[in-house]
Image (tube, rainbow, N blue to C red; front, side, top):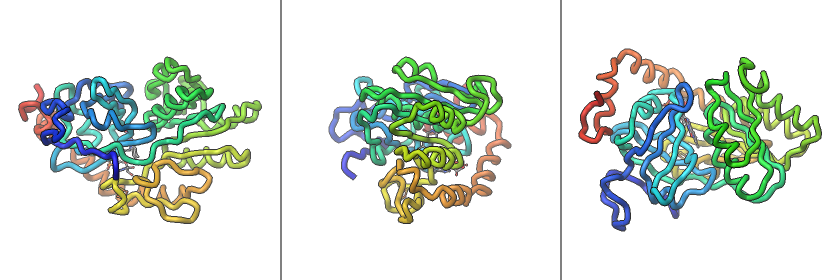
Length: 315
Ligand SMILES: Cc1cc2nc3c(=O)[nH]c(=O)nc-3n(C[C@H](O)[C@H](O)[C@H](O)COP(=O)(O)OP(=O)(O)OC[C@H]3O[C@@H](n4cnc5c(N)ncnc54)[C@H](O)[C@@H]3O)c2cc1C
Ligand code: FES
């Protein structure tokens, strides 16, 4: 796995990193309800990263490993930016961290980079937290000279994030909300279909979001033979192709999303199997997340005490 580095809590053998800063959070703030911007020191990952890749991190030494897309990097500062939606135990704990705290370990960049070239008209679709996954791809496609249209889907105006940042990068945004509070009242697939019906045929479509959303994006584009890529979100454990946790079926073949993906030809993906596999641990995940509901702020902070600079709880 050439190029993958582990930003662990250890001195940097090359001596180029500021060891004391390793995995330290430079900034953390909410961008929408339940979604947090986290910019963290990870200089070697920032240097090697390309759009479409992700990290696997643990919040604390005894925590579980979760995959998160590298949304942006600043090689000069030596930082990577993550957008994290609190959906279960680990993401809820991660989103309690503040600037100055540190993350136990971060491995990456993982996965194959997105193929970035001048396709012509590129449509990038992000639904829910998929907006964070689609964001770096939209930026890279815009930099490569594409006319990039980003269809962003959220349940309401408050939950839609990164629109201003996309616009600042020259991307045209097409927001959609389930309740009609902002943009199109409806699904991202309605906006895509309307675009195609009006004769604005994309040369490539990139989709990231809930499994069912990606499945229907693929159905809309299939009839028109539009190249469509989906960034798959199976459960991942090691991220190196060894555990088999991220198995997906593409074109009738078993592939590992962590090393063969996470992006695949959406017209060949078996989304039904992916959806079923993602539900397999749901009762367990729910129990572990609900256990956090019984804790007060002090007890929650004690679970992540090792992430605080002095090992102490926040005030
Ligand atoms: C390549 C990739 C990139 C991702 N990028 C982002 C991102 O940028 N921002 C973001 O907020 N989320 C991202 N995710 C999803 C994120 O990894 C999960 O939300 C997280 O693992 C949930 O962990 P949890 O303990 O908080 O919740 P859990 O209670 O464990 O799970 C909640 C939900 O997340 C799914 N999930 C659980 N564990 C994993 C896992 N190890 N890998 C993938 N899905 C899982 C479950 O199917 C369930 O639906 C990405 C997933 C993948 C595969
Ligand atoms: S996460 Fe283990 S093989 Fe992909």
